Image 1: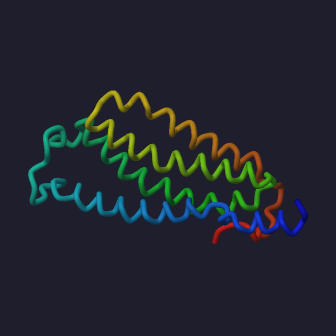
Image 2 (image 1 turned 90 degrees about the vertical axis):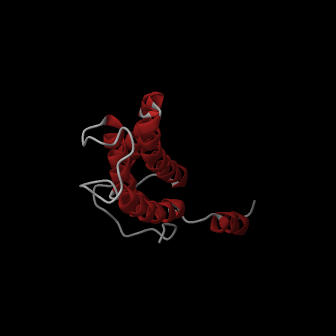
Length: 157
């Protein structure tokens, strides 16, 4: 393959982290909507709470609240992560792997927290996305240069 063909293939790939940014904004908006629904029965709201959500410290209610918070905080982490990963000393495949690990954990952890609120064996799946999130953050931390250079061309936005 010639140099121009390699550049053409590389250009056809979406910029690193594009999916992270798009999913992050959709999840933040979706979680705000979930928060509005949760607010209907919180603090003496107009709707009676469903079973398992009556007491403030009921486990299902706590898991849903944690999932709601995670569905805002983890996407915000993605918005911070992508530009820093683009500045890391890692090559393209390691950068993409870090972004994919973070994206997987960002989507899976809040989803599994919500699932665990209604199906208790779902709690045993929680270490999977947590491990992906930890690996993504460690990958970024290990790849940060001593001094941060400017943003790369292949980074999103």
